[in-house]
Every structure is written in C-alpha cells, then in structure tokens.
Image 1 (spheres, helix red, strand yellow):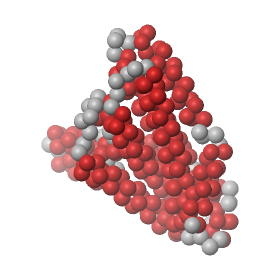
Image 2: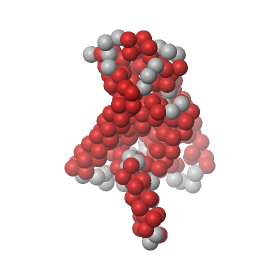
Image 3: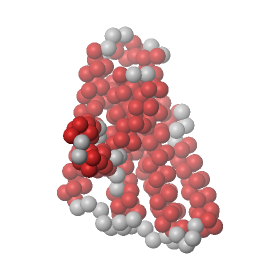
Image 4: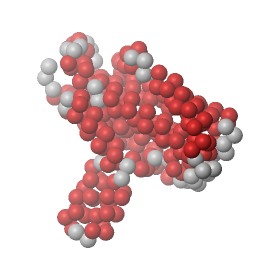
Length: 256
C-alpha cells in the first residue's frame, strides 16, 4: 500500500505538470500530417501516415519518460523532500518502486490514448491497417518505454539529472542496435572488437525485442508467434525488475 501511495502521488504530480497536453499535440500533428502528406507524397501517403503515426507516438512518449524519469529521485533529493519520505515507515525500495509505477501509469495512459487517436485517424482517412498488430505493437511500446523508465530512474539515482537524461537516450539508441553491433563485431574478424560488442550486447537491454513498429506497419499480420511475444515481454519485465533492484540497492546506501 505504501508503494501505491507513492505511485499515486507521482501520477498526480506528473498530471499537474500538464504532461497529458502531449496527447493534444499528438492529435494536432496527426491532423496536420493527414492534410499535408497527400500534397507532398507520390501516392504513398497511406504507408507514410501509418509509419509517421506510430513513430511520433514512440518519440513523444520517449521524451516524456526520459526527462521525467531521470529527475524523479533527483528532484526529491534537491528539494530535500527525501528527508520527509525516509523519515516515514517506508523503505527506500518502496520509494523507487512507487516512482516507477507512478510514471508507468502516466505512460500507459499516454500510449493508450494516442493509440486510440491513431486508429481513429486511420479509420477517418480510410487507410487499410492491421488493428490487432497495431494494438500489440502499442503494448510492446509500453513495455519498451517502461524499461527505459527503469533505466532513467536508475541513472537518476547515480548521477545528476542532465547526465541521466543524456545516458538514458544513449542506452535507448544503443539498445535498439545491439544485435547489429554483434553482427558488426563478427564481420570485423577482430577478436577485441568482437569481445567489446558481445559485452555491450550482454550489458545493454536488447530493445529491438520489444520493437514491433515495423512488423505492425509493414509486415501487416506477420508478428512473431505467441511464444516469442511472451518470451520477449518477459525479457522486458525481468530487465526492468533487475534495474529497479540495482537502483534500490544504490539508493539504500546513500546518506542524506
């Protein structure tokens, strides 16, 4: 219950900061894209709109998660409100878990609402689309960005907010190309480079396992089978739990 109270407070605080205005901005840029794309594209406006809508959803949610997540713990430390929290009968791991769950709830609302808006626009514009595939891709986008949320919170415990934001974006970018890095290491036939790329693959999250945007938009119904989907979802959840455990351990050793 203490964890959920903290999560509720984080949720309310983020909503008060008018983060949900992002939803309105998303609807606006989709409306503009729906009018502009037919004028500038060469009969490919449907496919471009399909791609643009889901990429814009991903990018806007990522920005929200990184900038807010990186400062969730640091803000409490800077304002000294952390002293009030740790003076209460609440463990530091509960604080970390509450921060994570609160921002994840905001993220869930953002992605669910933007997905609904996206599907409405596709329907209004009479653009053929695989609804089930898009919904599954949206669920996995939530899992991917929840993992990034855990990364941002963990780095926010270690470092200042600016560095945490920078490193979180770096983890996101590198996490999407870890499999390519491994292939590059093998092609280089350089043992040192191959060991480095293998190490990066083991340390960094493999975010490509949670990225189904291209499958949903271009592959239509050609999503991974159910077993693979469950395995990849479990990977994302376990990686997030591991990061939160690290954040809780480091946070428990800090003195204020």
